[in-house]
Image (cartoon, rainbow, N blue to C red; front, top):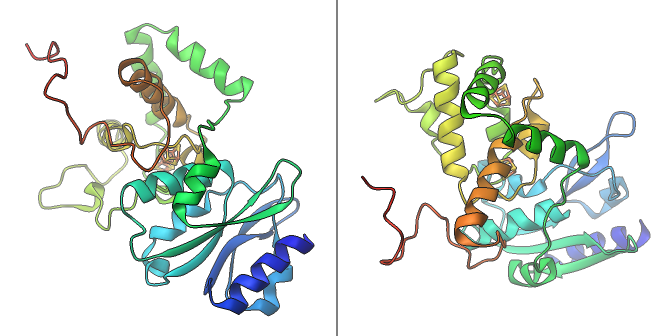
Length: 266
Ligand code: SF4
Ligand code: SF4
């Protein structure tokens, strides 16, 4: 931790970071986000395999939007989100630094999203065997079975929107779910309204989801939300090629080529 604390102290002392978003010890073995702007507090910071929150989500929150010099502790999931957010021009007025861990668990300082994109390379998120199993089980279902599965799962959703709050790619200042003129999506938790919310969320994530798993981890009911986005990533890869997160990757629903296939139009 000595090198980690030294990097953070230097960033704060030099003014390269006015705010450091990292991790500190939480309850038991858990880690929680920590927000540090005073060099005297760096000893609170930890960065180990227990650190899992995708801290990039805070970079677009109204509370921190006005801070231009920020340093963030970045796991591979956080790096992927930062690179995609940078590709969506979310950091134009920011000077960002990143603290990452190398293979030997040494802290490294990376300055700027472009340098981070090079560091990330073509790294993908590996699925756990349980996740692979669930996805395979889902893919083996018939269309009717899949519909029944989602009816059962989504009937439990209480519309707390924790999945939206935890997602780094959900950064609109006003979400469709809060628009009531017209009311696109019903407010109470009902099966139809829950389907509407999750279909809207899936469409907004098409080609943008970085597979960080934060939405599923945030759901108090443990709904398997990542099946939707992972399946979408697979479909997009099958049609448009590998899902490589880079600053040049365009959102699939925002781009077209004149020679795109149109055989879905009848
Ligand atoms: S939809 Fe879920 S997995 Fe995808 S970027 Fe958002 S939080 Fe991460
Ligand atoms: S976090 Fe879970 S319960 Fe809350 S809105 Fe999302 S899916 Fe529904």
